[in-house]
Image (cartoon, rainbow over all chains, first blue to last red; front, side, top):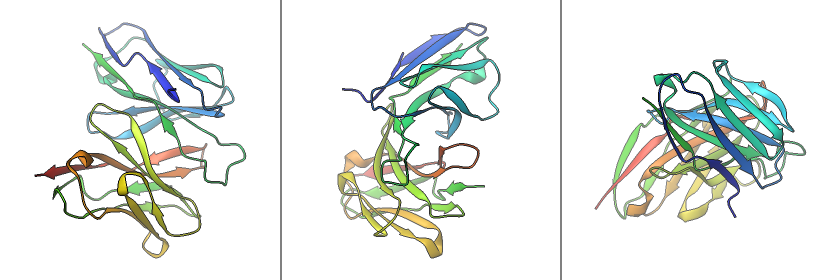
Length: 117
Length: 114
């Protein structure tokens, strides 16, 4: 049973195209995230949703639009793809409500390697 | 603002030797601290975490880390490194400023030589 699963694992596309990455978690967590890992391996948060509500939007271009149909899913849609969007995108989830216990870590998906050509 | 610093971009150790990866954090209150490992082409796996109590925490794969408040550090250690430990290691802190999120250090790449 995969806790956080994202599809596709690899995505190669041309500049200007629109693409989506899907993410699902079966951990019952109330918060989901998208992170971007650049070529230097630096991980930076892009968005977080808590119970389908947008909580964090870290100055990401509005070409990136997350959508959370329910608290188990957080999809990432990217319009008009640019070369600089090439990166690995990680979905993650955690339980935020009722924390101040040990179960506060984020669980990550395997990543989606996006290559824009 | 909360931040995490990993001063070493990469470290090379011989197989069987001991390992210490450094991590310093900046956080006003008692932090939640984590170490994650990322093998090539893989996602992030949690090695261990600290949120309160005993300052020496044990993790998976024989790793441990010690929280030192006076030094704002959370260094990762392993007494004897195996070739399979070669990977990227990330120290992280959970922040609740502007929304609950995990903030990562820049990572330390571990190379293991035979």
